[in-house]
Length: 379
Image (cartoon, rainbow, N blue to C red):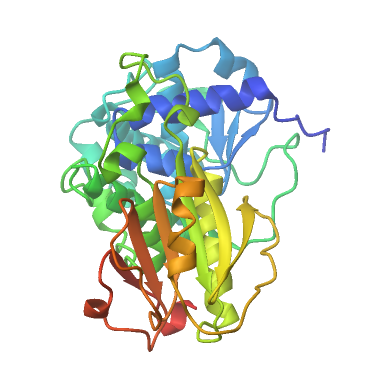
């Protein structure tokens, strides 16, 4: 194994730029791209995936026009999201790769992105599942695409850093959840919410993951400040040009009821999931408070950080947290509580999401905001 290539700021800018451009074309595809881990590697010609990570040749990526880079990255992310590596099984590798490419190329073209001449298309076959395409192209002559068509990798390239010890089932489950979140975000943004390409058999064969509380939380946070109403401050003095994700950052205040009625598992589950959103959506920022009859904090939340030890344990009064809104000026408030406490007399001007564990107050008991309920098995 050769020395891993460092992830440089230039490489990060290439990936971030692609994510931003894709978001303007499709919330569905952009959300999938935000879930992908991109790793530089000079052992791939352009890009490839082992089903878990996407490996990108940094010099090749830097030489491409933006929209061509977008199509290349989306091509590999779709391979990963659709489990094309894992689903091959004992099938012949080159023919399977060709079948999977036909599927993905059609999806990339449907997103309005350019497909290079080397990207084969078949408008009939690309609507089928990859297993059906694999059978349909049996006996077709080799089109001479050489190694350029072998982007489905059996493992990480030799110049890639070691991966975490996740098995293929865990990886597939994570991509299933990513697809569910992409559908949810797409629906919220005015898309079709399930499959932006219509009744595509390749997506239909994947049973849609249940939209559990985690996906609903992602849907709530995968928004921009303007989505929550009010003044669109993104465009002030800058016309309509968006230069970076930071230009439309969203700040969330996360409050956790530590009065004794919310257990530690629910706290870890919620804060851990918020950290996951922060890792996938760089424009989302979050600050954490614990609260009983007082507010304890603030704690800045970052992906992967250790969750601060809870403080409190007295009664429940929601008002101290709401009194902090003027200080922090968040775009949204997420409050984990069973709902039994003193509410402020008036609803705040920002969107509020109450996250309620089993046995908590009924929805109609909350005087304002949206209610998201944790499930026993998800805690």
